[in-house]
Length: 121
Image (cartoon, helix red, strand yellow):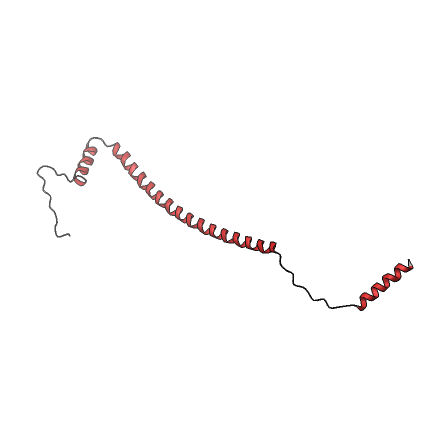
């Protein structure tokens, strides 16, 4: 064992005397990391494009929904009006028909005169 101990001591002494300053070496980035960065950047661009595109589609669909809801309200009002007309009988029905004839069909009663204001007032 003495021979081994002396060898170890000699190696240790040589190491102490041979201290050198070691310059840090730049690590080369491998192509794998470069490919990873490129793939990550492409994914971020794709995700941003997708989010912007979907937000535009959502706003378009919201405006379309508003238009459909307005049309639905109009149809419901017309439906309620027609249900009310459906129940007209007698005098109410004749007044309704007379009103339609005068306003929509421009009919007049016998002996009735129509005056048109040409001045526009």
